[in-house]
Image 1 (cartoon, rainbow, N blue to C red):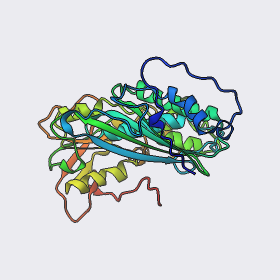
Image 2 (image 1 turned 90 degrees about the horizontal axis):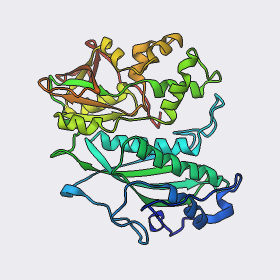
Image 3 (image 1 turned 90 degrees about the vertical axis):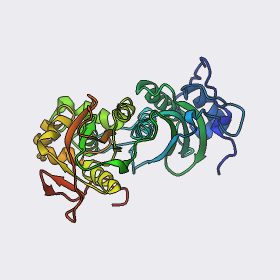
Image 4 (image 1 turned 30 degrees about the vertical axis):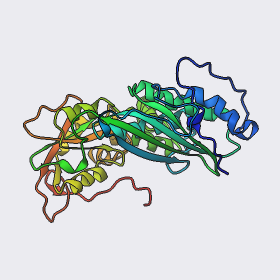
Length: 354
């Protein structure tokens, strides 16, 4: 049963707070909701809110009168596994980090800067308190280490359920006159990727494999880290906005699914240059795909969850250095939304319901 106690009413976010210690093996049922809140809230530290502790909701600054807002859910065995076939396990720290990273990336994709986050955490009563504490530590570490220094961790909610589920909502301030939408791409624009692609997808395949070292052992730990603790460049979105990006989104489900989404929203098509994909691939990914018997370019096109940015820029604009050109925006015809070296490509990639 859901409690009426909200995390925001207990948040201690100002100044240094000593973090309580937990003995291994203690479950959330053993200390109850209040005891759990006392242990995890001091760990959820970001920028100070205008109002956090003591009320039913937080108060967050909204410079300019408008803000962007995003929400995303991670569900056990749908978006992460506690125990992977490879033998690896997802720690609370991993899940907290990824929950923060993917939501911060959505704000980044609007050309905005994150200003607040709230977290709803559903957990079985048998969950160890240590796991929940690690989750809070991982979330806070991602906010800090990824550079979201303005982001307030303003509270949220706790509930009991049959499986772990995390829902995070994040707001952000707009750094230019308007946010950058998916719908603004124009024919002739340069299509570019901000960040590197493929590490998270390679990590997922390694985690799902019974042979976790795969064909390239030296890169395995980097790819697995890319899947479990992705590192989106949170400076890329605001920088793209300041350089006049006409459209933008983050690449969570792979280029083959996200490119057509942007093209459809803008009423255009996109032609990707195969050879330019090499420059957008994370280090070692092309070689890893080759050794794994995969087509390297197709692997990079399908790779998701690196949370790199996909953006379009006017041809006369100086593209920020973190972005790599991969193609052009072309006229929409009856032939489809996505082309590779002029040949039509059908959309594939991650879909929750396929």
